[in-house]
Length: 313
Image (cartoon, rainbow, N blue to C red):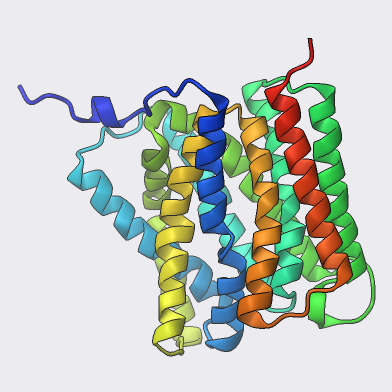
């Protein structure tokens, strides 16, 4: 009888410290930090439609996931795990990429990455509701400050280059919808990663969403054939291979080690990285409000992590 290789691959080996979860989380965040600037580049400059970018990159990642699952002969999820994987797929494979791609047709990349700074707070709340973690009050205070800084930035900036007026615009609503969808997917995916393994969770979610995403990719190709040079396609490849697959492997590994509410706050570092990439790659003007907003959310992330590492007596 052949030994079941999935027994050793279906669940991550336990790690003894919270710092391990934070390390994996930071690795995932570093991978994600290029997502919005690169999406902005291929949608705006390369002539690729938002539907093609959001769905096509999911198809690329799903192909990699299918190869990995087949090559390692992973055990299939069982029972309600399929329904929970559908929640993950709806949030992180479909919802977040589609909504952010359309939002970035009018909003700047630097605006988008700071609005998405609401994601750690959303993930923390959903993790508490789903996993019943109990962070101290000081944790919530710093997380709320980070969320407030991100919302304030969105209101002041008013949707980026689409207009000079202040206030929330359609792009902000799309970004906020993406935050909610992704937060749900993160919380459920982090829990599933403790049962199936980190890379297995995102792989099964990608495979589950592959058929509808392939259909939508085909529709986008007919409506607006993509254009762009080798560099543009390389950026698209990054979105498929790293943003949609490898980055999630590290991120779900960190969430699985947990606590999820704490590890989620690491993602507050992403706006600062994303704004920096937007300035370097897209030559977007980074004003004082953007710098202050990014600094505020990073300080709040540091405070939340520090508070969680020192729980109250």
